[in-house]
Every structure is written in C-alpha cells, then in structure tokens.
Image (cartoon, rainbow, N blue to C red; front, side, top):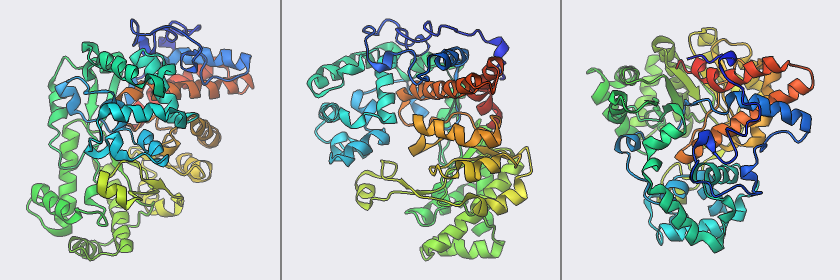
Length: 502
C-alpha cells in the first residue's frame, strides 16, 4: 500500500484532528475539557519559532490521521482473540511497562509492590498509589510524556489528576473507562487505526492466535508474527540445551546435531512465513558475524549443549548464527533486524525474582562496521535482502549506521530504539543520519512496546518530530514545502511498508 501525498487532504489547521477529539477522534465523548496542561496543546513538540511552527502544523496535517503501521512490538496476540476487558489500571499501565517500573525502582520502590513479574504485592490499588505518589519522577522523560498523552487522548482524563491526593479517584475513573465495551483490545485497535501490528514470537510457537485472527474477517488489522530465535542461539542463557533439543526434535526433519539445528531453523522460519511473518528479530550481544565451518560450529554446539562453552565461545557461535540467519533471509525473503549492544539482565537479583525484560538491561558501546563486515561483504549488495540496524548507542548514528545504510542496498537505519526511543533522541537521529542517507534508508517508526495504550502516543510523537525537522528545512530554504509534504508521508507510511515488505 503506497499513499501518495497527493491522495491526502491536508488538515491545515490541524485542530479538527487534535484538541478535544484526541487521537484519531478516539476520546470524543470522554474528554473532560480543555485546560492548560501541555498534553492538550495542539502545538506540542513543534518548533518555538512561529513561522517554522506554522509549517510544521501543515506538514503534520498530512500524516496526523494516517493508519498505524507497527512492524515490531511485544503485545500478546491472544488478547485480540479473547478480547476480554483489561483487568485494572495497574495491570494495563504499570506492571508490564518496564520503562515506567525501572524509574520507580531507581527511587527505591520494590518492583514486587508494582506487581512486576507476576507478583501481587499489596494489590493493584496500592501499586497505583505508589505510581501517583512518585509521578514527579517522570518529569521530562519520554515515559512521562506518553502517559500524559494516554490520559488526555486515549482515556479522556485530565493528566493533571495524576497525583497522590487523587490516586484513588483516578484509579476508579480509569476502571470505569476500562469497563466500557469500546475499550476492549479489538475495539481500541479500530480506534487506534491499527493497520499492521507485528508481535515477537518464539520459533516453536504454534502461532494459533495469529491464525485465528487471520481467519477472522471481522478483525481488520494484520497481526503478524516475528521470528525471534534468541533462546536457541545464546548458549550462555539458562535453558539453551533444552530449547535446542526440543527445536531439533520438533523441526529437524530427523537430522541431528548442527545440521538438524540449521534445518529446524529453516523449517520454523517457513512455518512463520506461512502464518504471515515478514521479518526476524535478533537481540544479539554484539555485532560480530564471522561464519564458522560446519565442523567448528558442531564442536561449539556440542560444548554449549553440555554446558561447557565459555562466554567467549558462546559469542563465537552466536556470531556464526547471525551470519547464517542473514544467509537464510537472502533465501526466504524475511527481513532481518538486529539490536545489539545490551547487557541483558544486569541485576541477578531482579532476574531471579522478576524474570527477564523487567527493566534491568543496560546498553553498552559497539563497533558496527568491523563486526558486520562478513555479513555485509556477502549479503549487503543484494537489494532484495533487507537488513535493519538498530542501536542504543547514539555515537554510531553518523559514524557507522548512516554510512552503512547510505552505501549498501540491503542496509537500513533503524529508528531510535529502546532507551533512545524518546523525543530528543529522535531529533538527534534525524540530524545525524539524514545528511548521509537522505530519507529513503529509514526503517520507519518502531514503537517496540508492551504498553498497548501507548502505541498511538508513540506514533504521534514520531509524526510531530518529523514534521518539526522538515519544517526547519523548509524554513531554511533547503526544501520546498511540497517536497517536505511528500517526504513526511513517505517516512510515516510508505517507509515501514517498503522496508518490511508489507
């Protein structure tokens, strides 16, 4: 689906799209009324200069109401199958959002009291009170901005009410909203204008939820699985041997060892393709991609299965598999995304008590080009292979990622991700990469979230940031406004569809 700018009606005043109506008219009938809170300001995130701000308004008008294309995220597809009401405000907004719980933890709040990792603490209302009592912690943060946007434009509740004094009445007001039939997952998907939503899935997942949604003509959004093999490639993680044995037994076509391992990966990738997958995602430790000879890989795999591989040896095997996955993508057409450079589960205490993905992963710096050289040398010149590079290290935006994406036909610069998925980092990314890559080598915005109701806020943030950047180029007479209008439509809608073969 390609949306040319000429097919869109510019919302020059933009007030019909935002203001009282919220995202895509979502909260019409719920909003308590306009006030001076920044979350309601129709010019939020736009330039302070009046002339440039006027241009940004007009550019934003072209994309404000476009459907949401989300090529990577962490929602559970079963929630759309079941379509049951969200249980309570804490389970929806606090417990699953590690951006939020990690900052509260930094202030000394036990994540058990926030109901993280299945813990009950003293109940959901107590967790909500802790959140409201410590709301000031989120001033200036991306998380704070998203939460305020959700309150104002998804729930129709004045975000000024987030405070200790109103914690209980706010909890009750949110509970009333969540109990309404049009605030169930499927109904919100329609209101959010979700067009494409990709999930992140284990290679042995039966993808039954995806199949059910695909067969359901009453549900319009495309919910696509994403092949995420980390649990089967990281021999330094607990459960590696059991995972690999089950993988080979299930999908190895009777083959054993490294040969059966590779065959099982290929077979499961095809299973995902048959269920609508367009991409694979790899949370690799570093950027190394040196391939091994089969005998070398077999020896390392044997060591890993016996629990005898050192961390360095495990990384050598992981590098080989990163290369092999690129090789497979060249054959089967799945887009390959990587996000290296994160020390996973840095807190042993938190890992033991709350599990992974609960806020204690910490980024570290990386050398991209030397590590990726074997992969780029063999696959980077193939325009049919799509390879998206994400990072949590901003120093590589202009030094490595932009030059790589600006030369290799296969390579694309991934949107600011994870810790740098925030307003100022988005601006720095655009400034650091565009001079080298232009606008065409961009992945499109990635929300990467487990917080369902933050999706429209995150995508709207990206649209406003892009409008602001392009408005500056127009004001500086570097682009015409018509050209900028074409570019912003391409960035918001066409780029993710093009890069992810949607």
